[in-house]
Image (cartoon, rainbow, N blue to C red; front, side):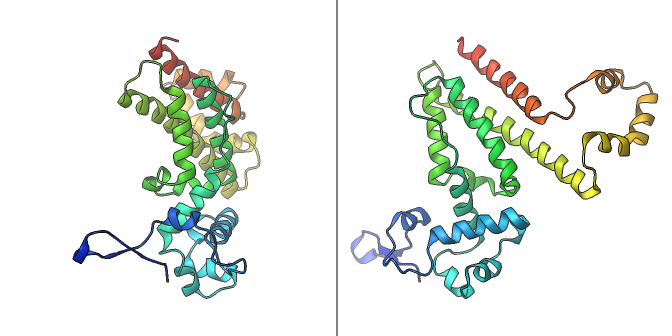
Length: 249
């Protein structure tokens, strides 16, 4: 069972379960501990990478770890704990050197790394939103970016809004990229050309209607249709340019 601690309050004392993160930072009771939160997190991430987030159940996880399901429940209370552990583990991969101080460089670096992280772990897009910021590693990422934005004339609300605007772009753009990749895989299309060829009947009908002249011009003249990295960076720089203008720097 998970160890508990008493709260202060004399006769009103009650047992309170330590937080997941408090337990994670405690040293293992022995070197031979068969199961730890670190092992659980690593196995859950591995399973999600292979089969998707929906595959991560306590039963599947216990089987992968070679333990009984109840053994895993002694360490985590259920799926929410697992999501938190998984998100914290992969978010620890995001880092910017301490000597990088420029706010734009800090936010841009985290944005590019986050895109790569989500492409490596597509299940991240399905993580429950309240858990995204309530893990030590994720909080460290947020702290680093907010501190970089500090001192530029933004009040607390504006600073968080600017930080979240970049995050919203990163997650939205990358989720769109992942969804398109998965859609192609489901249909067996191996390239952008194959995708466009398959969708040509619908597209040709729409273009012949004459109602979408700007989109038609894009379709005929664009040269970076199959360059998601360029598209992401261009969009990201547009967002950062807007923040820079707002800051007057």
